[in-house]
Image (cartoon, rainbow, N blue to C red; front, side, top):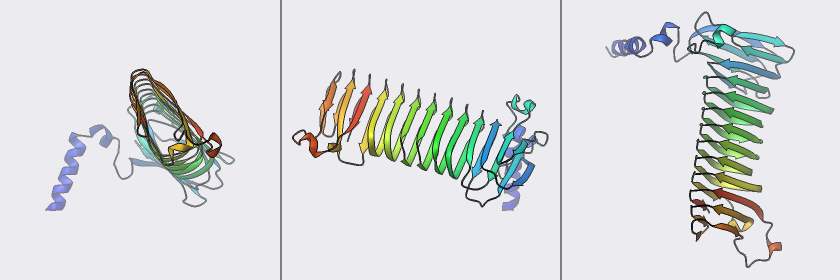
Length: 299
């Protein structure tokens, strides 16, 4: 009886909630009908034009690259091999049909250069080691886990999430949020109205938003730091002693707090914690903070 009720419920959802997807053969387990499956050896570079298809790369699966594509039966992606390079793309008629959805899944070696361009499809990468990685999305989200590379990410409205990463990062988004945890390497982050949330990060830091808040918890700063927001709140909690830093912080109308000391609105503060110590006692790291209309907190 329980199995019959469950089957009835699944059938009802397919008919009432997801008619377009179900009609195209879409299902949660496989992402639609299996359109293509191939095994490739000796691949060193992967370039993907995913458009409205979701794309996943799961590394650390051995030397063979296994490519699987799911979706409507008449929308088969093209897979082209050129030496150590593999290109995956959709036919032109698929790319201009925004409603067509599908899923490309690649299981392959950890060491591979990856470049992905996506429209509305999401991008997911895990367990990848590469000299460089370039990912571009319009509205699809980008998620990375356990990656080591010099990374360039860009979205228009998609969110960016990164867990356990090493290497430099250059990330630009218009309205998407940026969330990074357990990261080492220099970071250059830009967001217009999205939030920036960082946890347990090490390296030089350069973050700027227009109206999005900036929250950093557990920052081990190296070389220099800069956080700027026109109207977003800024809060930075360092993993090391503030005496290692030299602050140059300004605010047009928000308050500034460094440690336990607070300055009122409209201040420009050049501050060295522990000023009673000689400069030679501590190699100070320069840190710049700027906000037009919101409060700033540094601890």
